[in-house]
Image (cartoon, rainbow, N blue to C red; front, side, top):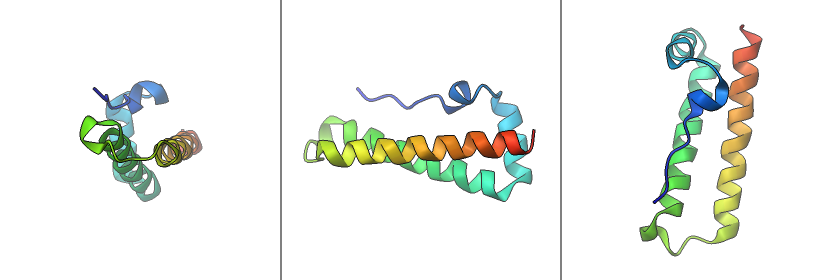
Length: 80
């Protein structure tokens, strides 16, 4: 069964801090929304019901999700 990644653990920032910063930073807010959307797409693609999903498409989604995570990290460091 596919499991969502714990973004906050990966970022090494407490959820409360990220949410506070999100309210003050529109770019960070958009990136977090993008990440969650991509994560949901990856989960759907990995689920049994999405058996028609091509491995290459799944890999591409995971790469996009990772790229957005790196942008989130940079945005958090920029305002630290």
